[in-house]
Length: 235
Image 1 (cartoon, rainbow, N blue to C red):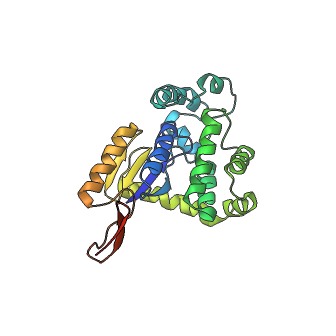
Image 2 (image 1 turned 180 degrees about the vertical axis):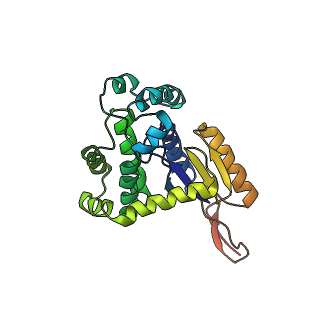
Image 3 (image 1 turned 45 degrees about the horizontal axis):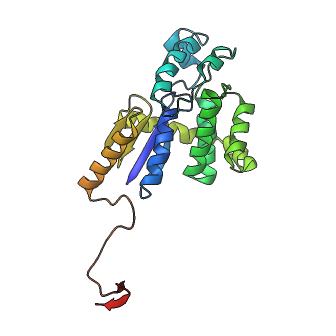
């Protein structure tokens, strides 16, 4: 089952959703999860269009954090700490490029690790994740090869890969993040409770004849030997 997980490093509801999706991935090992970029504020110009100024973003967004913290299973948001910070609210671009670069050199698990490290830096430690020093620290924390990552991060193809994700967002008609698209035709929108995600995945698997764990049975009519009650039985 192909799962595309759309999220943004600055998206507050993506923080609890990523935590749940990791549990989903562990429970259903036959899922193939691909991480996709969704930009809430690609650069400061988008913030100015939405909020009137870059300076106005933080006050508005901290209200979103309150709701996201209630949604979060672990209530990890450090809202009071963020109120004390004087940097402008980070944009999406550099963090999304950082996660994409990790994915390009080391696969989807590396993308996920960098993405989660950046989100933790913002929501728990209240760091400016558009600052390259903060980004580099998150990458080093993730375990990916820093030198390989840095080389990939600076390549034009990395930003282009992010833009291609954003084009996919438009093609699917996705309106917000987080979003999960299954087999390119089913959408789970928003930070849903884990049981809702599981029920949805199991329903789709049943409808499409997909086995969520173990091996998919393709043929079962061949002769075989097996052990039954400590005895060999051969067809």
